[in-house]
Length: 199
Image (cartoon, rainbow, N blue to C red; front, side):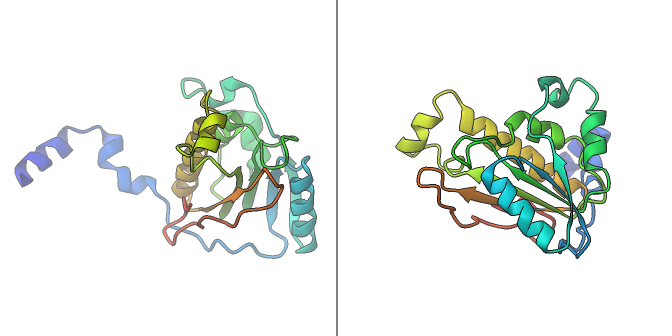
């Protein structure tokens, strides 16, 4: 068995053999006063409240875009220079996803997928506010909302973003927000010590 594994490893592409080198060392994810935070989806009521709270903590805020052309997320095309410049130098990025604020504004799954391709090396933390149901698509009430695969696309885009954050050494926190009553669900998990992807 060991010989077979060695042969498979030797025959694998270089990107697979160097897979461990693709994961950056985790940084200190704590956001310091004066840190730069990009908030995408800030035009929603929840986004505005979150932006005000971050500004009160002494963060330097930049408003990020909430949508982008599908070509920005196409893996067969070069990553978006516009988005790369938008996130350049950021310590943290906050994504307020579509559906968490009564359907008003919010970040599209396409933007999440595109952003995953251009996260900066300076990044320490990613916060994703996602509508509750993304993680419960087999429950009847959420399955009905997922008839066209909307929640599945949201989950896939969030997974791609968390994986990209790990590659630059940043941690990811996903908070699922209750949309029906307008209340907020608690965070279903935070990034682990190895740099993110917590749910």
